[in-house]
Image (cartoon, rainbow, N blue to C red):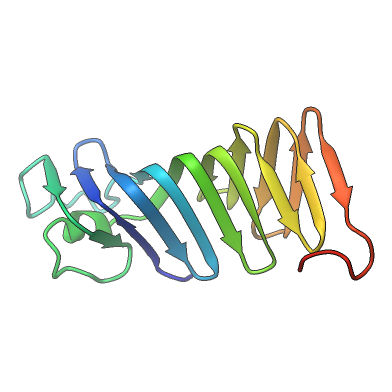
Length: 166
């Protein structure tokens, strides 16, 4: 699978809580998926091999542009504690904008569940794909299945042939 890269103004890593918190102009990139938000919390699976981190400090804070990846980026201060773990869940909040190869979506909160490869959008979610706009109380995007489920007050707007923005 493609590596995940996250950039933000600040990053706080809590090894004891198996999570990293990103604040300010957050951008997550994974292959063709790009997620922009104001705030993001990434939860990791606990280290499966039981090995302790080489860095005994519980939290690391960085100012300025920071980056953490699940790929090999051990040259960064906090990266070893982050890069040795796999992502369990990502919660993006505040002006969330999701871009995919064939569409995009906006909402106030998006939660990505790695084990199910799905994103749950809440807070006035709206999604656009190939000239179709959908909205509702909750939109669930199943990434591997290329399908979505819209729940609660669902509305679909289909633009005319050739008139849609693609």
